[in-house]
Length: 414
Image (tube, rainbow, N blue to C red; front, side, top):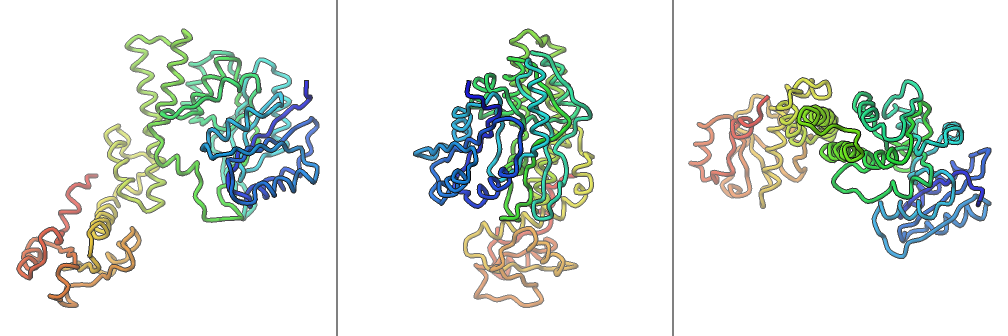
């Protein structure tokens, strides 16, 4: 036996500044058990190797492995896991933080519960600039342990609490067969099924992980987790269905028509809730076309008044139509002017158009500023009604460069 209790596995690639900050945080750990830090470098071309060697020279228990080629994020994480020699294994992103007290408590729980293959816990979203936690990703009211192959009980827990089992400390002997490639379903639901297939699984109340949402290194960066939430709703459903498939194959799920329909409906509801979150996130990014697309699916599913988008719903006709106009202008080669004709509030429309992505090099004018025969081919018209459209046709503007309000609004149905 090597005596290592915990392996902290860190995949990295060209993130020397983030890695340095995270390792500086790791220097503060005072665990009462032996641990190692396993870094897998995905063939970085920056100074990652020098940064790691600097901390090794300080005496930190780091083992460093550098891939010869970049194999992608999942292979790099698998590499870190495979090189780990601890009794337990935890993943740590190179820009996130572990909470030492929470780690100690989770390791103690695993020591006291040798039947448990994985201990999950909610995690904090953390503002590193303000040095404060923003929220927990989900809530667990009290520690709960599910026995081996209690698939249906775990599924109901996930559904009711809206749990995402991404952060866990695994028993390394179970992790060897837990972590396998999964592309068409949310991998962490699959990994939860694999862990539960081998032993008990616990969800603990005390967090041991901070996911840095606002970084002091790059405060405006986009987070990978947030990006996934924007597009992965169907993968979440796929993950739940994968989980239920494993349950069925282990004889824990009745696959008769009534049972099948009931669980399909639960997967549908879970997915719609995730789509509602995605719609709100797209709206925050001012992509109202994508938010509206998701709204149509939510509305058909009976969730048109979902609290995530209820306030946004009445704004869709204006915002979606203006973003559509901005899109049509930018999509058309050679257009450098947009003329607003007959608009009650052209100043407001101009502000909205800029806000939803109309490029700054496109000049916005009104028809009061005059028709320029020399710029007919480089001007798109947004006209209030058909009579104005007819006038511009007579002036020689191309028919498909003249849009009226109904062209943009008739398909935005709320």
